[in-house]
Length: 172
Image (cartoon, rainbow, N blue to C red):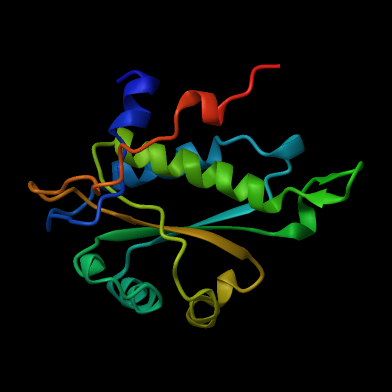
């Protein structure tokens, strides 16, 4: 699939089948995240693959959406400011940018593997860090529930609504 087709095919899937996700596909998704570029390549990002039944129940309690009930895996992405690149001109720390780049690679890789997901930013980060102490020192930017889309899964009504190019782009 061409990249232009991939980015248009991806949508926020919130309806999943019961089919388990193969480890090979999960590993390919993780590898895509690892391959993501970061500022000065310092990689201040961590990826957590959540797939044990116990861990899945914990993470579902932090993002209690009904459509997550039969999710076979979740990937969490976070960054740490401690080792991130800081732009000298304004002291802007790039940890959140780097974590978002990694997360975007993961999101697109999920689609490339024939799976569905949605970028979940609305979850209880405090509770997540309490239930997963290994995440406590990270700024959590995203959860990606991963599964095969249900046969009747469709994009949300607003999926194809885009601002006009003239409103989004300025050519200088």
